Image (cartoon, rainbow, N blue to C red; front, side, top):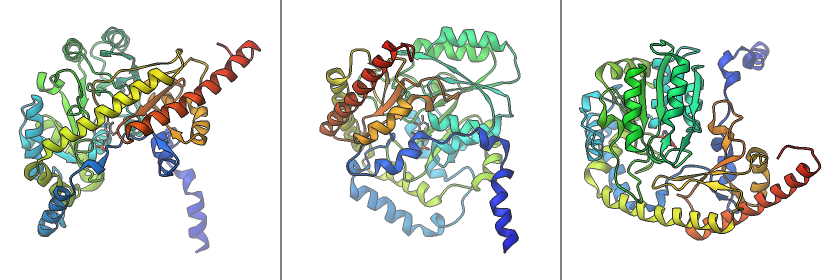
Length: 419
Ligand SMILES: Cc1ncc(COP(=O)(O)O)c(C=O)c1O
């Protein structure tokens, strides 16, 4: 018994080198704080599941329970065929033609990211992302120890001029360059959308420099203004497309998918066998039922209407309460706004004060692989709170920022920090 205890105590020292390089997710760390009733959370990218019709959910759960011979059993690694068919029809609505055989169902898009890392990355391999990018993608890829190169975006998405410069540095035909990861629609955390011209240019560059494009599209169906843009996958069959039900139905059911060529699906399948054999059949069955048998498009329109109101409330509140030194993005869809504050503000250390004022956000540095860039930025999410609470949260945040700015100005005047 004593030996076992000693072994347990020393186990952390035996952890793989990659563990020391991993950073915890700010959103995961904040999860407990966001449950406090006095806190208004602008941090997690959660859909408002209270908007889901209870009868539809109950029916889907009942149908899954009744099919227990299937749903309480192991399933195939590629997933339930009915689910793949439903996802093909969702993709068809966005302009992607794809066969259900070439889909692999994953535990949310998050597992898909991990599996792509497991399938493609050796330590030191190069991947390109937007900078900032989805912090869960940084976490998933980091475990495979790649060399991540973030490319800044503007209101039209990833800057293609800066991407080209980076690609020139990497060099044509460099075997270490594996893939470029992008969230072209209503990016997380930026809220920005890649323009059609940049989509076209990105695909040209992918062929010129021989890298795979991974398109992660959880928010594409949540558009509040402007017209639908063709996904990259609809423009080029070499693109690996990631979908999820998390933002249009439920993140509690862990269901997402990878749509790719048979070769890629086969290799991912091999990697997934060692991860989890298969996904929850119960979750997949419920998802297939929901998208086949309920008026989900009607519910989606409800989500869009409600989120649009919340987005407008947040943009108005930012305009009214935030200092003129701050700037922010104007998303046409999705869940997020990216705020940039003066360079001397550190949103990481400011979070404790914000929590005292009863409001949370995601500090910007968590969205960069180096954990340093973006210190003066923050991601705020508008999907979960009603407009009055959003305005109150922005007001509280503005007070915290003003206090910080005042303090920093005093330090700058005293020469203690740079302006
Ligand atoms: C861009 C992006 N990719 C993937 C995910 C993970 O989603 P899922 O719940 O499907 O695992 C998220 C979740 O917020 C996301 O924003």
